[in-house]
Amino acid sequence: MIRALDLAAAEAWIRAVVQPSGPIVLERERAWATILRIPLADGQAWFKACGVAQAFEPRLTAELAARWPDRIVRVLAHDPDRAWLLTADAGQPVSIAGNPPEVWLRALPAYAELQIGEVEHVDEHLAHGVQDLRIAALPGRFDDLLRREDLPLEPEEMERLRRFAPRFAELCERLAADHPVRSIQHDDLHMRSLFDDGTSLRILDWGDASIGHPFASLVTTFRFLEELNGLAPADPWFERLRDAYLEPWGRGLARTFELAMRVGMVAQLCAWLRHRDAMPEAAAHTFDQQFAIVLRRALSRAVDPVI
Image (cartoon, rainbow, N blue to C red; front, top):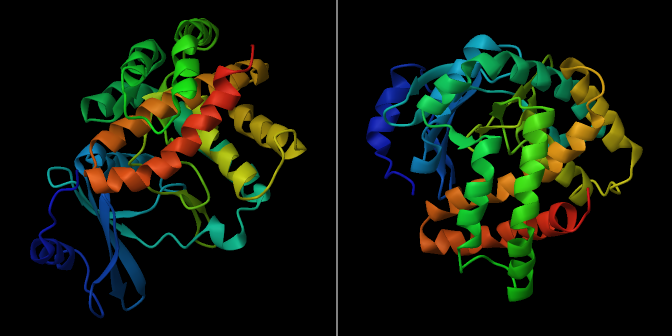
């Protein structure tokens, strides 16, 4: 559900922080957020009003920006109670350049360093509403998903998911024993969430974030490189990007990474369901077109393989 936005109140709040050089523009309105663009004499700023499911985003972004100013968008103001966020311009999304893998080779080690640094802030993030997808919570969350009768899957596909439940619990136990790290996990880390301002690469749009296994962040990154860039699953770029991401974490983690990605594909289904449940019915129908893709990718990559 998106809170009804009081545009007059939002504009007054914006003008208390920056001086627009022209009319404030409604850039985008979705079931989960409303975006306004504010023209400035020296560029532009951006306002975001978050829906209930993503109400933690303004505070989370502000906290991350304070600790990681070289890799998070600069926050001009935020209002956690109203779930409002005002940020400086972060440049161009890397989608403009076609999502080149070389950009991710630069971005992923810096993102891993952020995650390592945020380990000590996990409890704080959870207390302020970031969704809980820690390993111990996942089997229960998956069971909740399996009880749903309205998922955009065929009956045979749902049955495959149900049969996977015991195996998924085993995989979670293995991951918890092998690498029980928990940190912030963006969960929507793709070419329209990574921006280049000419000097730095900055990560935006933390509304899908969770506290979970950090390695699962690359589930979405890799999906976009396959589906939009056309990279084959065995393309050497995926190994290069994996190794670049893992370098700050330490040696000998390639096998753990593959396990975390498999668990993460299923965890992402639970995260998507949470956002779907918060939407109006009409918006959920459109949302399901992408949800079906993610569900079927999990079926082919996480449910069917034997690891």
